[in-house]
Image 1 (spheres, rainbow, N blue to C red):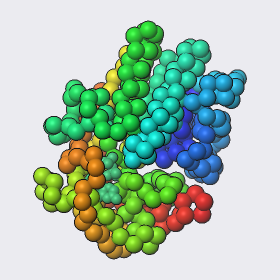
Image 2: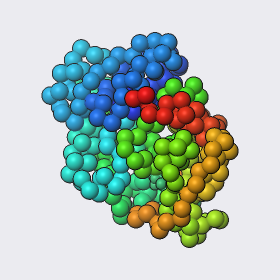
Image 3: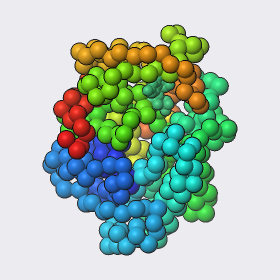
Length: 337
Ligand code: UDP
């Protein structure tokens, strides 16, 4: 297949592009490089041993996106482009709704115009809000009582895709609800390159281990979890990338949501220890008050993806830490050097 990857130069996109290439698919990366680097595309080509077709455009701008994709054919789209920082979305709601919703609308219209019927959407476990059960499966309510605009954009785009399919029965879409993606390609050549202070746990820990930041702040140690710190389901980004390809290759008309997670929860302190072990470096930390909007535990029940996509995670948290450390220690400044 010839696959359009929107946001294909980003963290998830770059790893997914590589797995697609390894499976024999052709990749068209569309990115505006607002939060990614062209160096990532160069490295995907180097690792994949093949060229990537690159389209530089802002997908939220219909005229620009249409012009940039003129004459470029694709059989399916994996939609990853969008803004993704929870805190920033609270401070800049209109920007988040405009960019994320408009990008999805433009892509759906473009797919319709081109007769493209296969779509994989990058959703998030955040659509479950503050889950009352753990592990959580896809039958649990989603898009209810969410606490930030970022999460609402994911839930709204899921609904937009369902409505689009109702009007266009040939459309086949999968909504992939990611848990906590971590790690990097085992080569250490591509990985997560957050701009500014990382919001997420593992890139922050990696920057402490490499000496770029002094100490980790652990957000709360009085949650009802075994050691009191928050529990999440960390999934190696290569497992996540393989999940996209498994979903894409099995798409049928209709809309299906899948949890992409490991099914295993790890606490903040367990991640700290695993990273110390993998890196051989200390990760000093302070316990600070909980972060607003955080919940105690979010763990996937990935049975549906295991059974219907023939996919499951194969990489451990220890491997994710080792791969993340390889990327961080050999690229301390990210793609910029
Ligand atoms: N966390 C932390 N310190 C940090 C960043 C995150 O203690 O600097 C905790 C956070 O409270 C949560 C877990 O690490 O329990 C994962 O947070 P992250 O932001 O990576 O992902 P989230 O699950 O919030 O999407």
